[in-house]
Image (cartoon, rainbow, N blue to C red; front, top):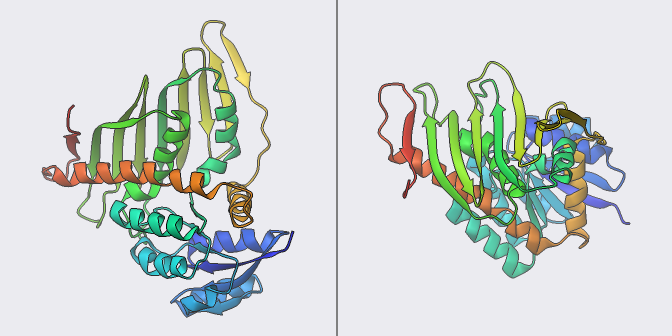
Length: 318
């Protein structure tokens, strides 16, 4: 297999992680690091023996691009790269709004350009192990994703943390239609965004309860998956999975192969570039989580805040 030349747009914290993973790859090269902050581009490029740039056009002769710029700058990076015919991995959210996402996905489909979203938890070994051990359909998913404050983010906690678990829920309740039952968001005066969000989503015969918080005192990434026969507890940070059977009192430990999710994600992106993975299926899997995220944001915007308290608004039909 020929080594693939990849461009990286965005030299912040997430971009730096992508740069490291590409640089450590045996089948890809970090050709150029692009950022309007020339100091950041120089720092990341210099660390991984790449070329720094502040010009988006320098990505267009590469085999693919990873876009890790801020959400606010997403469209001005993704749209030109699509128009240049460049396969891309875009950090979530793929686009700031659902309408913009649909536009980009249409261009990708019409031009037959592979795209994927940075739903990195799809590649977490603990989550993959849990999916493999779902011997009966899930009845309830509880996802908790909490973090200390992050002042430099330019999007809501819904489009930041919660988006991962909205995607996870779609994979746990596979082929089930989703209905937003209710949502609660907190937009503190000190922030430009919703910083805490909880929601309940119905999926056929089961439902999911998701909690995302950027005002926490510690980092938590946990899943609890219930079925009729089993309970699975997943620690995404430690990549640990434990199962329980209440009838027999059995405690189950599942074998897994710990690996860095970003590495597996890069491998999948390279498979998309090489035509090994299905680009149409990849496009189809991007929209559902973004659609739910926008519904949750709309619900929170329609509610009337009272002082500094959380606001609640039930979805239509509830």
